[in-house]
Amino acid sequence: MRKLIPFSLLLAFAVSPAAAQGTAQERSDCMGDAFRFCSSDIPFVEEIESCLQENMARLSPACRREFAATNSTKLRPEHFQ
Image 1 (tube, rainbow, N blue to C red):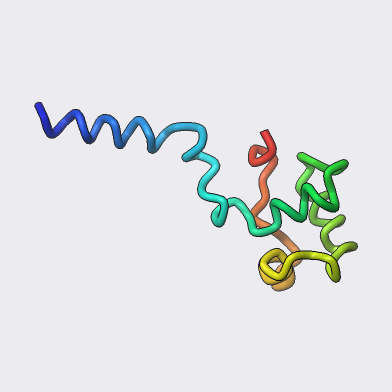
Image 2 (image 1 turned 120 degrees about the horizontal axis):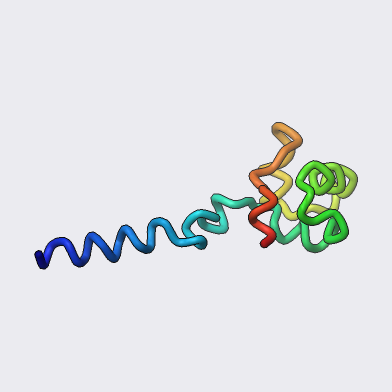
């Protein structure tokens, strides 16, 4: 029975809303830039990505690395709730 309690706690944390959003790295390196340059487009990811493209020269290095390869990000609408 004692072994079930720690497992239950771990399971509870694993399904929490924060866990569903992932870590900051899993969400996107572009989160800060989305707020900085594209706040009027939030939570519409396609519009945010278009805005980021327009601001490519001003993006943080981390966001530029994430975005440059595919012109997309790991941003999802639920990340802005």
